[in-house]
Amino acid sequence: MSLTQIRQGSLVLVDAARVQSRGALYVAQARIRQMMKWIWLILGIAIANPILYLISVGIGLGGLIDKSVGPAGVDGVKYLTFLAPALLAQAAIQGTMDETVFPTIEGFKWHKTFYSMNSTPLSGVQISYGVFLTALFRAFYTVVLYFGVMWAFGALESPRAWLAIPTAVFAGASFGALMQALAARLEDENIFFVVLGRFVMMPLFMFSGTFFPLTSMPFFLQWIGWISPLWHATELGRHLTYGHAISPTMLWVHFIFLGVMLVVGLFFSARIFTKRLAK
Image 1 (cartoon, rainbow, N blue to C red):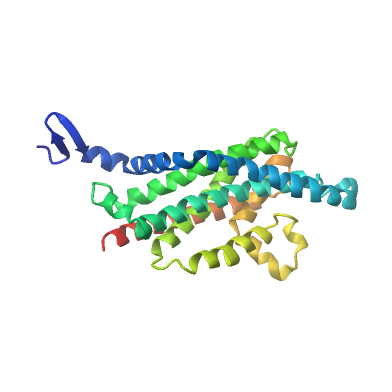
Image 2 (cartoon, rainbow, N blue to C red):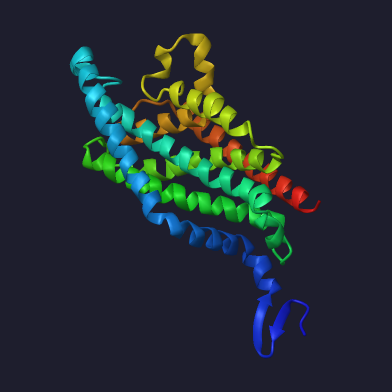
């Protein structure tokens, strides 16, 4: 019998060499199959969220704001157009976080599925990357659906607006990678979700220039936006969807910030997965 294959007669049950080369894809495939059990619920949320937000805040509240500020609008455009790119980025960040944090805690603590995976030729790095790839898959179709709703509402003014899709997914990946690394370290998650919701996601949503320009906030609060992936993604999204002015230097700053988050998150996520599974 080959050292890299387990056979039953002529049937190859396990090809270790193949698993080692494509392990992350196999993990992602398994996660996506599990996700398909809830696909209609996930799709329903992905479609309902932008419709409700854009109607209630973008059109409802936005109509009052547009009347108040006059023809100049907010940042030179209708409030709906100003708001939509921020909601697009938020959808990517929220979706990626959900699909990294919960499966990671489930795999290590709730169902301990990562340990059974690791008993096969799958490594901790591959399991980590597989979970992350699944999160990217969810972020991508969520953002595409959100973008379609934005188009239907007339919130896009630039022919290059479609570039906001990969930009939002990139931002979601950056935040999701860090959250996956953090979730992998958790031994007790009881207070984690309270802290995450109240002291991370809420400030992220409120103080990242989502509903109003960051510069309109008091200076001592603007630092929250500067370290927020949502603000960086929102600035890029507004630049792409309606031509929000950004200097070349700030374009580099936004992409470098998100890129560093992504690399650091993936590095520590893979390292923590490997270390914890080796215990």
